[in-house]
Image (cartoon, rainbow, N blue to C red):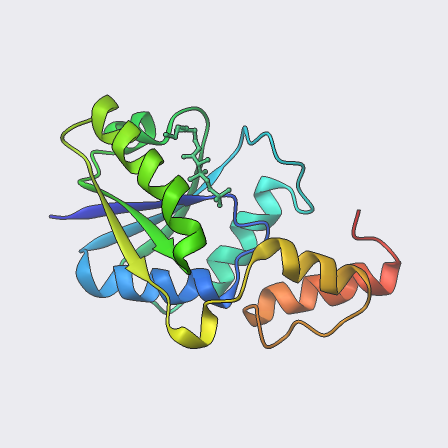
Amino acid sequence: MSLAIYPGSFDPITLGHMDVVQRAAAIFDRVTVAVLQNSSKSSLFTVEERMEMIRESVDGIDGVDVSSFNGLTVEYARNVQANAIVKGLRAVSDFESEFQQALFNRKLAPEITTVFLMTSFANVYLSSSLVKEVARFGGDVSFAVPQPVARRLKALALKGGGE
Ligand code: PNS
């Protein structure tokens, strides 16, 4: 049985991420969307909130579950006996750092292969950070995120929160 992990910050999950989840689910028997806990980035949503939004968003996609992890991605992949790490690629700008990470990860864990999946053209410009910025200033981002995320961002904006 093939298992892929799809690691990331997902703060919050966007339709670009969802596109990658759907493509991965069509290739692997099981896909675990894995939220990094110990990120150096400051986040808008807690890990629990992010996992809940992802769970609601992937509901109905067969073979997909949600988890979180601490530490190295390859260590987590090993612990859950994943064969592959899935990463989404949007534009050439993503490539350099993804390429470095994939080679570093291969050195650390040669038995785990990084698989890059391209998002559809309609989603190439989406990023969690732009979604947060636009939402913070009251802009509508419902075209860019799954409905459970749009709902929470709207609630935060109404509260005047978002920091
Ligand atoms: O959504 P992001 O923030 O681009 O995801 C980056 C992530 C979480 C995949 C990456 O930072 C990562 O793998 N972090 C865990 C620590 C680790 O394994 N670092 C070594 C990478 S070579």
